[in-house]
Length: 179
Ligand SMILES: Nc1nc2c(c(=O)[nH]1)N[C@H]1C(S)=C(S)[C@@H](COP(=O)(O)O)O[C@H]1N2
Ligand SMILES: [Mo]
Image 1 (tube, helix red, strand yellow):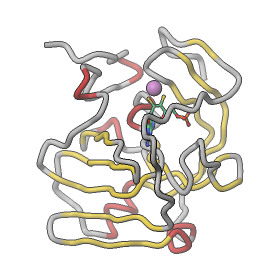
Image 2 (tube, helix red, strand yellow):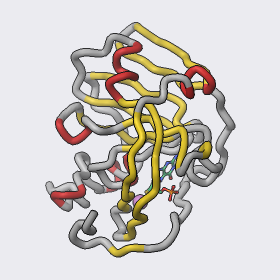
Image 3 (cartoon, rainbow, N blue to C red):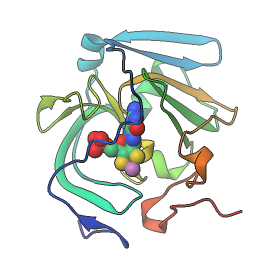
Image 4 (cartoon, rainbow, N blue to C red):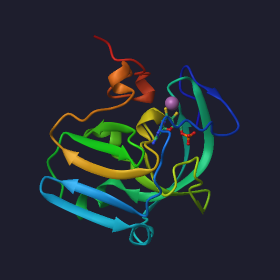
């Protein structure tokens, strides 16, 4: 894939983790209204339905290209809690980092990633799992994912609260929120 505007290629991931403390998890909480489901890491491994080669783009300008990501499509996750009508998906890590995405065209190919290049995620990449939204800047790719909620209530986002774009679409170079 040609690099999007404003990005430069680097060889390997830079570990960007703002949390100091990251409790290790082996499950994921999925919420829609009053439906709450907790799936274990092993149950999640059995639901893998997506394998793609992707580039990751940090809003600061660096990109890492051509890694194979594997995981569970967002449609499959939504189906588990019968989530049909919702405006946002709220994402939270076990260390407290938060972001969110809009329920629109930009997330149709998003998924919960459990493997990179055929192996379980390393700790710096977000073990046991991270959200991946190929069309969005990487601050939406929440590592150490603990909780995913389909909701109509506007969620909080760590970088979004600090002036970064709410939508964060890479092809539109949505880096900062315009007032
Ligand atoms: N839990 C958590 N996820 C996170 C972050 C974070 O600080 N904590 N940083 C985000 C940002 S800004 C980027 S660029 C990517 C970096 O991913 P990497 O550490 O795998 O390179 O993770 C995203 N996901
Ligand atoms: Mo980033």
